[in-house]
Image (cartoon, rainbow, N blue to C red; front, side):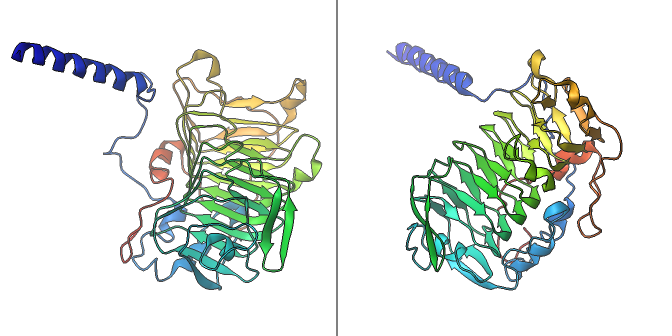
Length: 390
């Protein structure tokens, strides 16, 4: 009996082992990921505030730390602190203490959270201008319902929250200010939809598994920085530019910096139309179709990125032009300081200067791509503890 029990136990162990191997995430034959012994270098955004133990008492200092085109985004700086205590949601008549009540106010607000919470919105969250959503010190998730819409507003900061499993909204009334509630046709299921807005900064968020895009920047939005975020498990990751006919997107300027594009991402990291995208010091841990793409003659400067191609031989190329015309050869797409591993390669095009032409306040030094694994090692929400450096 003892021998039979031992055999059965070994069989069970074997089945469990096979199941674990079958469902384990895919890993390449050779690992390019940084090891735990890799020396970590804090990037310029993080070094601006993370080293200070009084971050919780001086939360609004974060607004001074952006770089790139979204540098001017001040969010709720100089406004009152508003504390979210209630994870419930009412799209028409939100209650004080809920997230929606805070984001629709007309005055500047710096919004924080009293505790860990999962907020499942009943319809899209319509942001008003001069708002910061600051998740530091709590584990905050917006998930399993419609998510965030930043439409025709300015000066919005979203920092340190998880946005995942976002669903399409339904037609209905949604309040966007204390004095106005309007009819909405239903959101597409984006994580964050930035529409006709300016001075926007998305930093240290986790984004995954939404019905549509994770972040869309469309309809002549500009002055946007997307930094220190962790993206994973999604198809159409980041769209910059509405469609090939919407020429107003020529004014769009977006900085995509210090992000970790993780496993199980298919495409659009980002996909750009018309405008200018500075894609700098981002970590690309494989892709299923391509990493950076576009159409309608956008300008894309890939600088200091770390590209690990998938093992499949047919999709090693970082870039994809969405056109059948030969005119793409004049589009300004350039690579500098990038690292290409596992056969990754970038097809450049165009001629002339491609520099981002930042103001002195917006500018930052882009590191060599070899440093990018370290610079992006803390992408996503941070586990900040009060009275300690974050």
